[in-house]
Image 1: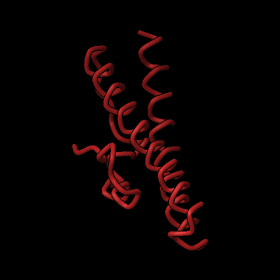
Image 2 (image 1 turned 30 degrees about the vertical axis):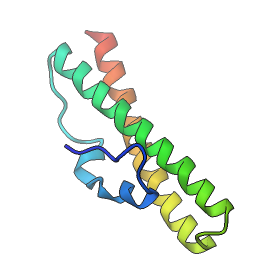
Image 3 (image 1 turned 90 degrees about the vertical axis):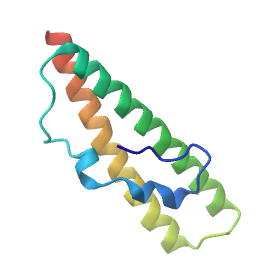
Image 4 (image 1 turned 135 degrees about the vertical axis):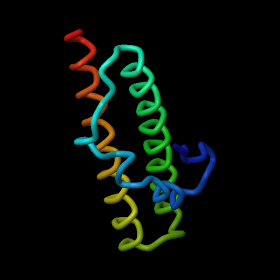
Length: 97
């Protein structure tokens, strides 16, 4: 599992595969593994949020056009929503254990 570089360009966010953010994916059953998964997902979410902010900066300077910005931001937003959903699911499972 690879992480997007913290100082990387926004286009690096597309390196996430759909399986890495698949909410329906089977989750570990023990608490320690759930915590490890939660930490990994929080790191991915942070990285995507930073990439989104970097994309906004690039757009505001005029380095990319409207359609490119919309395309990249929609992709990032979709991945971010998937990761956030999985994080919330894991938190609910952990709180019920």
